[in-house]
Image (cartoon, rainbow, N blue to C red; front, side, top):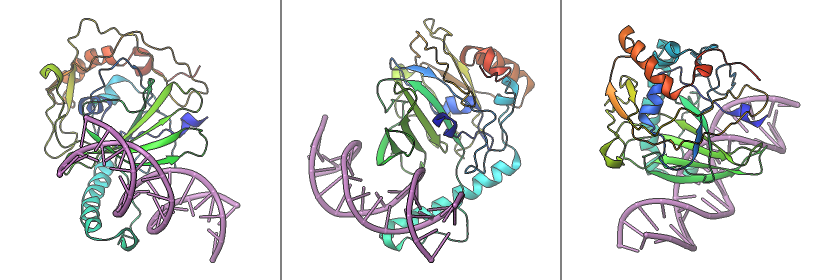
Length: 272
DNA sequence: CGATTTTGACCTGCGC
DNA sequence: GCGCAGGTCAAAATCG
């Protein structure tokens, strides 16, 4: 099951909502299918720390960040920044990468999208910097980096080998800037200058035409149960600052989350 | 002409 | 140590 390879770690800092907040869903006609992987065990992602085995809204929303995760993340940030600067002055063969330090990764979050196009417009500008053939898939994986200066967010896009109509997008890192594209001004992202989840946001989905028909699945599930949504997922989110650690906002988020995350997901990641 | 994509080479981590 | 696979770089090509 290739989909099991999807990694997503939001344990280090960001909740699903934060991810939504900082990675607004494209307003195209693609059908969004989010695939959190609660029980994912990924050897490569040391950051997988806080994935609730039974994700409920509270667990997901509550931002945040176990300390270990944050620590790791911050190390990553600083390390990467140094590294980046070094890279710019050296040729690729002279890359003075930190050897003793195992390269740590930023929190990642993967989701599936039923879409015909590979590269979904999520409101940010991305530059493709690589493409590789994937072992277990006939489809190549594309690598994108956020074009905003200083923002090291990356994303990988690949098609599911099981279902070519499904695009698996993996975001890595957190945007440190608002989305450059704000359709009708409806996306107001208050990006935390620290670039971190402090920018806990809550969702407001004002679009009446938004229908809660997305189906979610966990990639731990043995089969792809994708029932596509018929609703176009409009990116017309408004983000309001809210402390996710406040019970009140949790409650509120919970309510909002219902619009985004179906109860099925919030309850038991039941395999089917 | 600047921004973006393409693409082959290189680097790194990991399993054997 | 070697080979494989994933990830990244950067020059060249392409696009708007």
